Amino acid sequence: MKIIKPKKLNRGDLIGVIAPSSPINNSEKINNAVKYFEAQGYPVLLGKSVFSERGYLAGDDDLRLNDFHSMFANKNVKAIICLRGGYGSIRFIDKINFKLIRSNPKIFVGFSDITTLQLAILEKAKLITFAGPMISTYFGLDENENFIEEQFWDMITSNKKKRRVVNPNSEKYFVLNKGRAEGRLIGGNLTSLIALSGSRFLPTFDNSILLLEEISEPPYKIDRMFNMLRRQNIIKKAKGIILGRFIDCYEQDSDKKTLTLNEVILDYFANIRKPVIYNVNHGHVNNNITLPIGARCKINTTKGFFEILENVVN
Image (tube, rainbow, N blue to C red; front, side, top):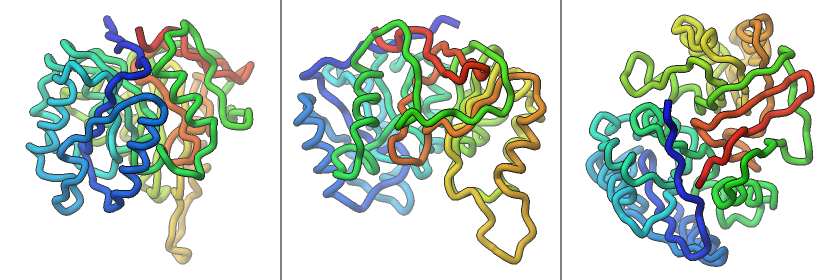
């Protein structure tokens, strides 16, 4: 498929912020993030959804959808960064104007529930997006390390042809299966991916490198979702597997019999005839690595590296 790449971000470019999913109750975080971007040389435009609330949603569906559309339509906005994940983007996915996105390609950043939008954008608009840090947990916080900032800015401001993806402090990847594979990086949050099952918004996983991460799901639910991936031949179609961080994915009831997360992962991925790497520092973690969804990449588990094979911005 012919992939569209957004233009790289340059100092002085306007960054739009929207909340397609859930709200946050901390205006200080938002203000700190705005100050952070402005200090880096990027003015910020806040969408109406950023300060809106309707239960677990950042305003009603039409408001969040209109914010999403207006940021893509605004010629001055060069990048869109999501406020947070949570839940909600799937509620308006069938109303998205994908022709608008295809005609106005720009950097779009988020992860967790935002995976839903990123997979739909890849399938319907063929645009590379970025699974990476969001406003609620990363930008403008004192506890962030330089690694996340350097890697994030390098990804969206530099059109270098190749780049190695490395963990913070050069932590090695854990190899489940040795081998090498090339394909388009497709995936993100496991729950959000599964939510698109059977819909017209889920991309094909033929010749892909499948990316998965998750938070706060017990092992039996991870088991169920992995089984769905297997039953839909998604694992079979993928050329290789990248497992990011699975945070707090354990059974909280100490009296309940359970498998461990690692046992579930080994059941599904240890004996397949394709390369699998685990513990890539992507997901609900500090120093969340930014990854380009839809870009060609390569994993070589024999030599222990993960590489993006093309420029992801023009």
